[in-house]
View 1 (tube, one colour):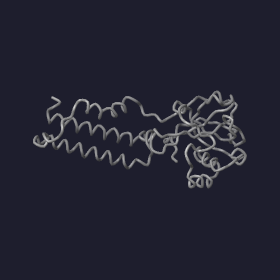
View 2 (tube, rainbow, N blue to C red; view 1 turned 90 degrees about the horizontal axis):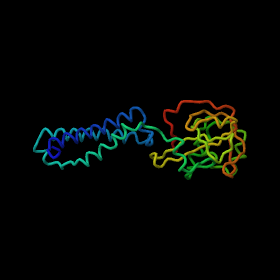
View 3 (tube, one colour; view 1 turned 45 degrees about the horizontal axis):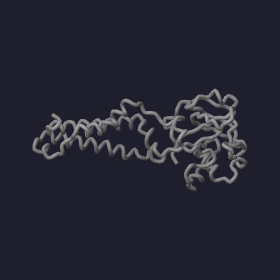
View 4 (cartoon, helix red, strand yellow; view 1 turned 30 degrees about the horizontal axis):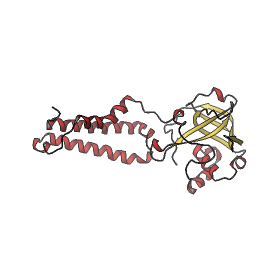
Length: 245
């Protein structure tokens, strides 16, 4: 039955439509951006349109047996390969990167893991201290030769998820977010060390808002600014949990 041209055309059309619907639903609910940078939204929309157009062409070929014979045969392996992303997408709930993904990545606490563009440093410097997110602070620290002293006393108001690192003291915790340039494969984590008496009670992956003041400190033997927290408040995960360089 699989070798029948009409069945092949119908199967191809349905699979392409399934892929288009899958991408559209992930785009509509925002979970597609758990995997790719938002700047690729236009390309995703074009991909959805392209899939629908090609599916319609297969449907039209199915109505004309002579045209259907001109298409290459589809194999069960080919069908399975194309369906795999849809099946995995349905079976595995979309989740952003979190604490479990930090272990095998470089932790940036006083400078960016990549070269920082001067424009990003200037943009961070132009923001009020309490308007800076974690990435802004890391950009600002990267431009300083002695960030621990230079930024001491500045107020901090950031949102991120909790991560406990064994190199920290009992009253310290990392507040982190991932930065994504292209997709999660190239994601890096930016973080700030936070000093808080009840740090041990905070659970990994819990999203919190940290308000406090920077003071000189250290992480893994290197000097850096540490947030002396005045309050840590639980918050909902942001609609877009990633930050973009």
